[in-house]
Length: 305
Ligand SMILES: [Zn+2]
Image 1: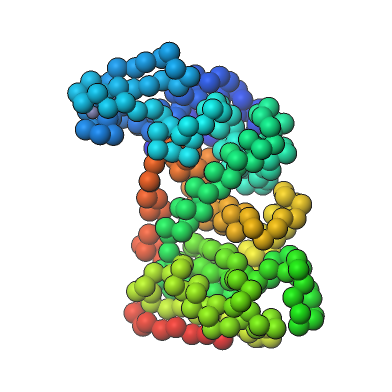
Image 2: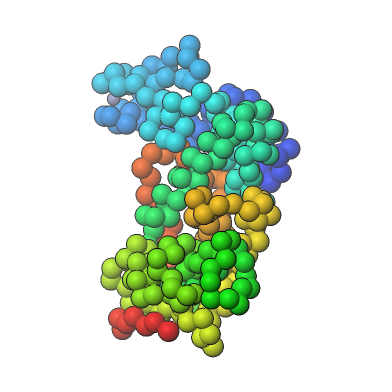
């Protein structure tokens, strides 16, 4: 990945670093083809560039395959400039605050609908990358509640959403890759997580040959995975601050965005660059979180508390 660029930390720095559409095109080029153009069809390194279009079109000199910087990516077919896309990626990548469609539409001068769609596509790319990354090694999972932290009644509050907060552990026994996943209400009866909730989670988010997975779902269980509960609480706070309360329909995307940033931070990986890569290179497999980072233990066991 291109490393000559200093990562901007404020919007002003970002604007200075990427003042024009051309600067953004150059940057996207360097991310997509770090060692120069490579035909996606035949691998040839020379191309004929047509610059009459809004974005350069590259035609392979060997097989005449035509491609562009956005072909096959979440930006394919978009009429929005790469400068606006890059600004949106930068704003989402900030750890201390994300962005929402109202703020983005003002900053990049597009309609609310366009801003919402851009953010949705970026979040979709994040969620897809997360779905392709399964928990492995030694895993801990704790139930949590998003929305209304304290509700003593057995009946669900409409703003109460059940979660399973899970993580692979590193050699030190600390979370190394976390997931916060909404639990469908059919898996929770009178606030008690059914076995189907944990089996569903295991099936969707855990590698099949996992060494050890421990669930804590009991409402009054004295044992708690406090680090996981802290992440869930932090997610709730952060999502509320940025989005001022959102419905269940998109909540999972926001939780995935939150976890994505936490996970990259845990691995000391730069979020802005990683996210550009995620949005630019089609069908990329991001093996940041391979099993070498996680603690492997020889005994296979599944525990539920
Ligand atoms: Zn070619």
